[in-house]
Length: 318
Length: 318
Image 1 (spheres, one colour):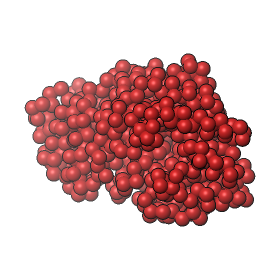
Image 2 (tube, helix red, strand yellow):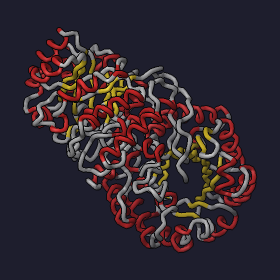
Image 3 (spheres, rainbow over the protein chains, first blue to last red):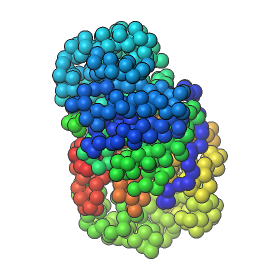
Image 4 (cartoon, chains in turn orange, blue):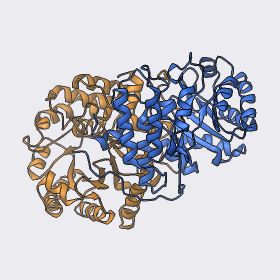
């Protein structure tokens, strides 16, 4: 069978789904952070510019983490002004990750108005990633969030390992809900529920969302962040949309995940998501052709093909 | 992030889904038919044996098509008795594809009790694949189905291009419904709705299923056959399950699709499907470890890695 030349799916809406979805594009930060070879700052800025040009309204630009921990993003101080001052990004939200108060200082000094903190639902990952207990990490974020809110910044709270953990196995829903509640109570405007190892399935997604609602968390404040390790990211996204979720994280070209794998199976690819949403008649503002061209261009910069199936199909790339 | 060692997702059922799903395993026929290098007959038989051992209850074994058209399956006459006479397959259904009366004769002579015919929803694909109009192809199948039913054989009607066609674009739902109705009216016991080029999205799936129901087609007689060309196969499957569909086609290891691509994005991988169904608490009878081991073994026989994300994650294969 030849690859089709359709370009876009036929739009056929389904009942009970939102009219519009906001895609939180993480390719420039989450997608690139594990790249071994240093990507030039100008290439990263051009990547963000092309993503904005493709219609993505929220593009996570970089992380103000210590360069020792994420060498690939050590150029945050140079990149962020470069990106922010691109003339055509006036309508684009450019959140940045900040791990602590020092990171917040650096981000605010450069004029960042949207920040994100990065918590863990499990003790094992909190220890591995943050060298702290879950509650110690929350205590570290508390002044970060408070001071960001004092500056009227929008704050997103990422939460890793919301479904399974490589050391602990399945993660109990109430354990996740407790940390979500703590992030919102300290002032986070929005959550991003991360299935960091990609093990979730649709019933588990619905169960967590329902439990959050029961604890007073509005669906409007919840974003979902699925990984495609087991090929489940898009069906989990569909389950979240059916629950009313309207914020979905995705990575252009499926960038990210395990940097050692030739064809990484990491983040949900933005193109695969846009294909489904377009088919469902859900507005995203994204031009799939431009986005695909951007991912093909970025794949050339990185020297390996995109793992996004939609990018491969539309670009005949293999 | 390291690959997890969970092995299986946490089962969390979701409302409105079937308790049990029958997987129609197509890897040995649809998965292998486009392979360029000839796979030895003994290897194919061993593949089927291992699939049955992993718990798959319906395994499409081969096709009695003319060897000129599908050289890879030219050994159907040798393979089918080899597979059927394996001692441990007594509980396994072994359907075979037959393109015409000559193929039916060959299959029945060897004792096949389940056959499948292969129709098209579009004129372009009917012409390309069968060198006939849609109605001429239906006329060709009519005596095949009638004679198979006279022998008490179970008959499946495959229908290609149910959602999009590479020459014609989106395929109108009423056009698909008409051919489905014709296949059932001539005596087919079951349909398999094929998204041959992988362009479908969940709303389109629901629309076709609803339209079929309105024309008196029971959901119990409908199977779905999705391709992962745009990464949509599993979310489309979820939509079909939510509609009540309980028969899902899948290919072990994701075998099939474009044989020229290094990492084919063809059939829905059985392992990715089983991961989702297991997570949803839906019984399939399949042992995911054994199935994954089978796909790893088959990937070794074919000399390239499996495109199934679940196989890659569980086997650390890349």
